[in-house]
Length: 121
Image (cartoon, rainbow, N blue to C red; front, side, top):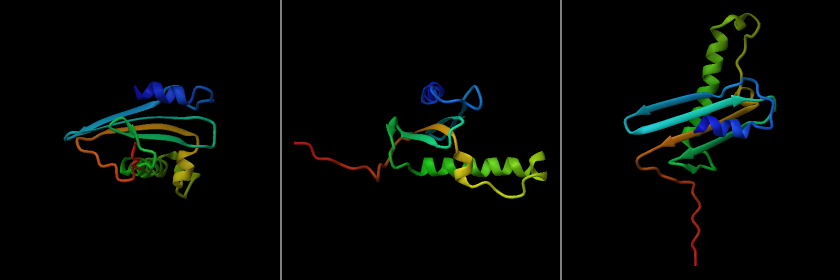
């Protein structure tokens, strides 16, 4: 389960919130799961998978997650009591600072375009 994986990745870090946030969604035959938790470090640690295969170079699911996270946090800030003290917008690097996340997408016919192929033998 992704929640346990995020907890494992954060095991030696000081976490900001006790339980990882878990999101699950299905549309047509595509399934996406995301687990996130913030810690007190400055580095982001985001792992992404397509059909249980790690996508080293990311993919549209990773770039979509990053932009949606930034957009959502900025929307929250602009529509909360924080607006009085904060007039600007956060950048993606700001939002992902200290973030540990695991993103898993399950697709019927994935295309691994950035994949390196090695011939054996």
